[in-house]
Image 1 (cartoon, protein in one colour):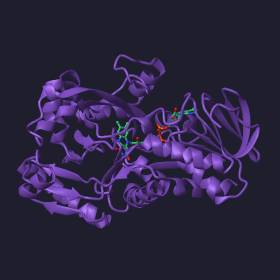
Image 2: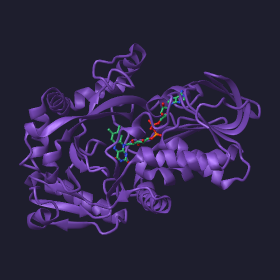
Image 3: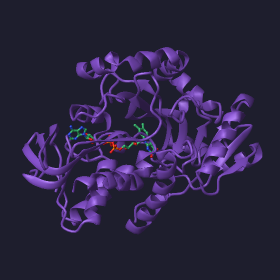
Image 4: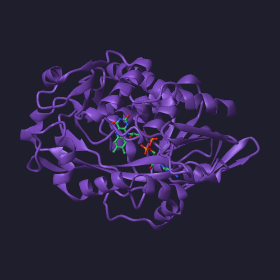
Length: 405
Ligand SMILES: Cc1cc2nc3c(=O)[nH]c(=O)nc-3n(C[C@H](O)[C@H](O)[C@H](O)COP(=O)(O)OP(=O)(O)OC[C@H]3O[C@@H](n4cnc5c(N)ncnc54)[C@H](O)[C@@H]3O)c2cc1C
């Protein structure tokens, strides 16, 4: 039960009560009768970080390199998530998405997305022209688009709370307000130091989001990749202008970057979000732009990859800075495919911090990354679409953790 004390002993200890940690703990609890699973969360509530600050999009699996973990787990995860939501009465809407090309020089990248989508077996994906785009999204403009009717929306925090309830029904325990400070393998056990004392577990699983590299590298996992936090700010459409967007409208993303580009999304509660931006943040919890934590900043600036990334994407960084500083520039990015949008239509929106893994060479790591050390499994990169993929990703992580049981 959230807030209870951690046990002295358990079979599996999961660090982090985001959607990935909770899905993994639930998966293990469902697989093994009587297994003792405990989740420790540093914040006073579950889904406090990425999971509670998303666009809420159930991705269909279009973007990802065929054969990658993301490609397989997103398609499988979306299918499993829709089925789960139907079973539990959680509202999930297949309201669809259009990826819109507005310039001739985007058509090759749109074609590549179509090819990937087909290879990844994304259901019902179709290339459409400007007239059909207008039928689907009457206020969108483009020269060509991909339409994915099985893309949808859900509240991932609600899904995470439901996973937590499933876990507790199977006897699992979730303790909030309990930061894990170290993991030390000793003989048959992983000794876990945390805010409430010490717990011995047969296996530990790190699903710590923006903090995932710290415990992993302290356990002897490779130093690469490092987490660099990217602040993603949204604007909201004023209620009287929400009719401009029926579902989700995305641009053709920069193929060099793992981000999908600033988009517009009608959330499951009817709110329409615009964004998010993507700027390196001064803290792993920089929900306010002024928040800087010296240890986080030192790690970001001390990592050679950060400087290599900045040098490579100077033009993109400048565009992002302009969008962060000016509402006109922010809305200008989206007016390319929804021309009726105006800066007077928008209100301040939520903020999320992406935990994005970055290599030493300055490459943003695209795929999910999971490392194993003695008695531990560490999720090192679980950016979007990890919320969509959570049920499928949980199976992969649980398979790895079972080696220690
Ligand atoms: C702006 C934004 C938009 C996104 N949109 C989408 C989307 O539309 N669709 C989609 O599929 N995905 C989306 N994502 C990605 C998605 O949110 C993440 O992939 C997913 O939530 C990752 O879940 P997680 O459990 O790994 O991380 P988190 O939700 O970040 O959970 C990690 C948890 O670990 C805890 N923790 C960390 N260190 C410790 C410690 N030492 N001790 C105890 N607890 C600790 C943290 O407090 C946190 O609660 C988006 C992300 C962002 C930021």
